[in-house]
Amino acid sequence: MDPVIVVGAGPVGLTLSLALAAQGVPSVVLDEGSGSQEPRPARTVVLREDTADLVGRLGCRELDRVGLRWAGWRSMRRKQLVRNVPLSGGAHGEEAAPLPAPLHLPQHELSAALRAAADKEPLIRLVPMSRIDTLEQDRDGITVHTREPGSTWWRGSYLVGCDGARSTVRKLLDIRFPGRTAVERHAVAALRAELPWPGEAVLHRQPPWRNAGAEVSARPLPGGVWRLDWLLPADADLVTPEALITRVRDTLAGWCGETPAYELLDTGVHTLHHRLARRWRKRRAFLAGDAAHLLGALGTQGLDEGVRDAENLAWKLAHAWHHGPAEQLLDSYQAERRAAVAARLRAADQSLPILRGGGGLRTLVPGAARGHDTLVADGHLGRGALGAPPSYSHSPLAPPHSEAHAAVGTPPGAPVTDVTVTAPDGTTARLRERLGRGNVLVVLVAPGTGVWDRRHWRTAGVMPRLTDAVGALPGATELLVTESYPGASAHTVLLVRPDGHLVAAFGGVRPRELFDAAQAALGRAPRDERVPGDGEPGSPGTEGDGPGREKGEGDDRAEAGARRVQRPRTRIHADGAAGRP
Image (cartoon, rainbow, N blue to C red; front, side, top):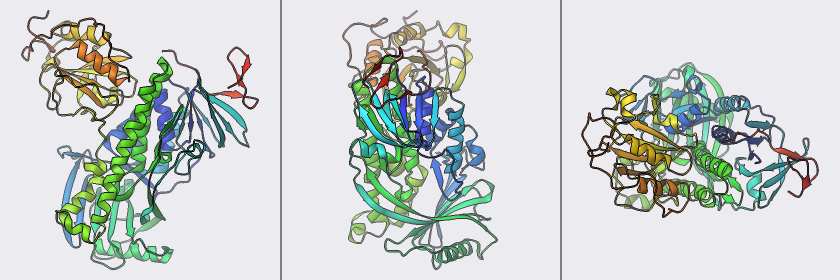
């Protein structure tokens, strides 16, 4: 089968190609540029805990060397400290804090790490200086043409446009991209200096010194480097270098008492737009990242959402690539991701008039300035409507309601908690480490597993019956065991999608319900025939009886690289016979 064509070699396109390769799917990445990227310290990205883990699993495990996890978040208003939030796993090693620390790093460092990982992957072919100008689809695949200097026809099974806000793929597909222009503008500077809050991110609203504007933020990077952002008025003139230097000096003096020694590394003006493509799929072509959406006001992170696009789409494309057409599964990409980003944009658009001085509307909304500062912090810290990981509770892949469903701390459709799990071969890992391999995960909550020898607990309690039920599930599956899961009682069985979102939870081993839920998660209709091990579940036993003991119960890897077509609109088949694409 032909590889997947990824148009665009930015962070989203490279993440998608690596995620496909991890599931045995080859891809060719058509890069409009030369493959090199100019270092810009003032152009940084923030990755949430789950997206940073995803990038790490794909081969970029050195990001903490070039990035920084914040030790805390400090909100200030005028001369007062509004909130000081410690963050877990941050620069100061705080582990007891309830909120995970985001990872802040320069975007060129992220791109370089992803490209290095892609260069090592035999299933990925990077093709620089390849700008597409033609896109054609048929029943069996998709054909694109790249213009000079490397004029070539490429054949693929699917195509994903990750080619940015001015996406050529989106234009060739004739997909509208409505929204709002210049929602916010920020003056940006990257500098090296000593500030009073080492390792902490700071948001200062209405600072009490001149030239500060309505809001300024400081986000730390390694090596004593900080990114500073000043919110500009909607009617602001162009920011001159002299005016920006004045802002830097006044802001540092306002925070430190006097302007400390500093080294200015980079400056710029960042304009934020809010746009959402009408469609994210057109037959065999998809959009992801900035080609599908633009956001960023109030701390929301466009690149973070683009990485979520790649994770969501990769496992669905991999399933269709390995197992044949899966239309409902592929349709669910648009249904889930577009709805999630639309909700994020809607929350930002509703909050902006309130937080930016919306006149009469502000007086109708309950909550003092402290509550408004908390709302702004949500977008930066990855929580609430502006920042929390998406939940696909209304996904077309959601299983039908069943009385067998059990309530746990994670609602259906939400990302699962990253607990420690044990595989049947005895290996122990974090649950997130088992994601992204194309497998549907079945996790049994079995207190006391750690004190049992694996030779015994694999054949004890409900494990034989659960193993049979898992073996009968559609698609690739993996059975795991955990000592505990938030909100789950002993012998709860969790069904988890390959991208880490919970499908359903069951009280005990229920082969029929488990099978139907797995069918739904893969976009298939439930089947009527019985599955092995189906029957009435037994009643749960007690801790110490072995893992989940219940009373009364004893692909082929294809070569990377798209096939070139030497003549326009002619495909060269594997046997050498020419035909229409």
